[in-house]
Length: 617
Image: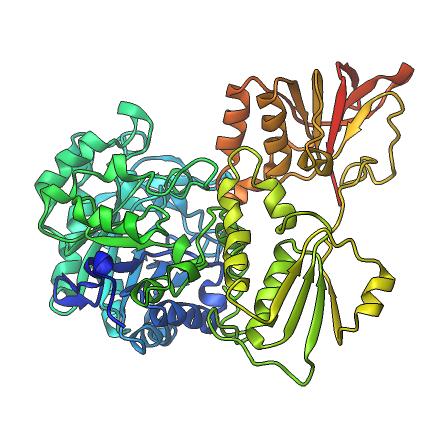
């Protein structure tokens, strides 16, 4: 089948230094919680991306030396020759499907607390390390000898990467994770020698590493530079205008530019806080300053948006981490004119949480992600049915829909019964809340697939009983009815039920059903993921005065793992929502509602017309 002429530009080969990518689809480096611990799984994961048509498939960041490692995070390493078999397994897996293999060499500097090696971290200046956990560790300012050593370590790592079979070797200076960015930053670089002060001096280490890498491996490997171009801190931080100035001086130095924003949180925003292509205002204009290919990300799932990026001269190659996780076969589906089969990323960042919790990657949209080797799961292939014929699924939430899709693909006769008048369950309900509309994609993809199957039937308004199920006569029954939110306050803090005799009490299920509180509303969040904050915002949007109470130190505390906690908390405060951390609610005297400090046990009365309990299910 010929590629739709609208999208043919996406399948043009791109020359990157001495190598050629078969198309413009570029899986940028991304972590996955596997690292040196789960190498076979990681190789299988990368191979699936290549099989799915990504012309370039990169590793995660790969630590180049033991003086900069980020334990407890589990990343790949290229410390010495003993690491080469591990890395070769990955490059070979990618090459099997005709894609180029890229490796991101990383020296984390101030971002590496060195909890494993116990070496003193190194940075441009004497400052505390920059880590998610705020370890009480100090970085030492690098001497000239340290810088010379770093250049040698990086060169050796590049040579090892070449030996391991990689086609593209990265110099990494982005996301606040890498020494070259720390040197570029005025906030972190307080030096007065030739590596500090002026923009040219602050960029000197970056330039030297690119030149060293080109000299070492540039004959057969492309050298890419991943660099952050905007920190969103104004003149105090790295900003676009300054980076455009630098770009004008060094634009032809590497073989490829990989442009990002300067922190992971702002670059990989969830869909609540960043639309498809939200990076464009910051990366636009760099392409016009170089003859080298430019890649960038934008959580792109629309081929029309991808084509627009190329035709308007914003990017040469369409970078993707999260969309390649949600659908490793996205390029092939575009090539085969199967756009309706694309499993679009919803931007929830559950994939990121794998790296943050040091556990294998997972994906809300793609249940096979991270299980390509361990369970032999494939995103596009599934085993045929067994000897049974018919299956009844009760409940059409995300689990019920995925069950119907998968069993339908396997060839079973599937009946899907839903008690409500619409399919999708909680994902349909929650996607109506502020910022969550993209989550509809979980439902829409599965409904689109099911509607293509003659062997799957759906019935709405079917509140089946046990008798109905037994009478129906299916050989197998799947109960996918989910759970209900508790209305008694039981969760992590309160383990015994509470009674609020004079307080109107609501649960998330009430909010989903359209039963909204009014007046002074207290949202009690002992769930700590997204929902408490979203419901508080929803109530505020509907005219309520809202106080969010949580036993945690911050709102939606688990969303640190999905990179959105700061944006959630600042957003709620800007909307006029009061936040009371370190407190739990409980019934007070004379039918009042109290907030009790979890440490001091001091109680205060809350003005409250309604209480929304976001606790447990």
